[in-house]
Length: 440
Image 1 (cartoon, helix red, strand yellow):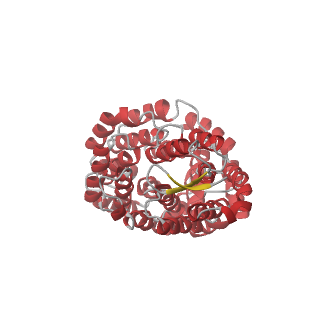
Image 2 (tube, helix red, strand yellow):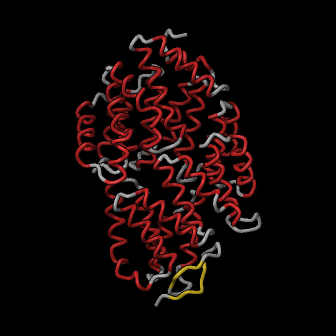
Image 3 (tube, rainbow, N blue to C red):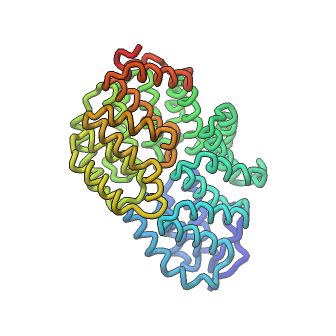
């Protein structure tokens, strides 16, 4: 029988049948916040200990949805379906989370994020709602919202309250994505001082160094903090950032070593890891590095991971891998599937920017550089709609520079390089001139 009167680790009321599953639930949420441990297993343990702990079941559904795949959606729907009949007995927090999870599973990612905003209106210290909401806004490329959702509850988190550091780290990432690098660094460092193993805060600071062109600092920072994040399930992405630093210094061998080592040394079919591998190989190829054999292997893994269109950001990166591997058939199939089968938020995003990116990158891989220029020039200002970070979407500008150079549009290439050097004054201009061919 479900009872009230208990709270989670951060003081927010939790509907449960007793104490048995609460500690497992808290561990699962803490794992999601810190990006450490085995949060999925902890959520399963919470449900096994107390099947009346409804929020633990919803958390399991969230974890399935984080996979950003059709299989993950199906798994979430199976978890959520039995809960629909219990709506009349649920507390307000559980009802709001259930609605958000159902919206996400139904393909309406915007409504899911809005539902989590309502959960934060109900209780501004609902740390689970805050984390999932910011992640959804990240997936949606809604840069302002991923900062604003934290800004609105910041005052509810005094420094002495448990969980304060995680909120500072989330706020730091929002500041960075909105270009306030100085404040982002202050909040990220405060979070890391509070908890050096806060991988999201570590990630925010890594972004600051990249966007400000402080490459040497970034390399030193990640090297010194390796013990804090290398065991995280977000480690591959952090190694990806280290590889980007090396590319900024034209150290392609070092970037390749990271690809062959911690990024792809252990085979993974998780999209969070596959997209980093594809993006890195594409950037290396733009610099003239032969990555064909690696791309063939990666393309095979991506072909295995692909199911019905769910998140076009993933499919965009699959196009990169397929293009590098010369798999025109897979590129064409992926484009066709997105035209026919995309639904909900994903379909809307495909129409706004996603299809243009897929077609633009496919055209570049096929050597149709003028077509790539046309598509990428039109879509670059709206590419944020497909999701990801500014650093991840930077590959659009890099590819456009390379397309201009290879099409003989040297004036355009020179202007794009000048724009980039102005936007990132600390980066080595020589790196971009390599992409632009004789545009210097």
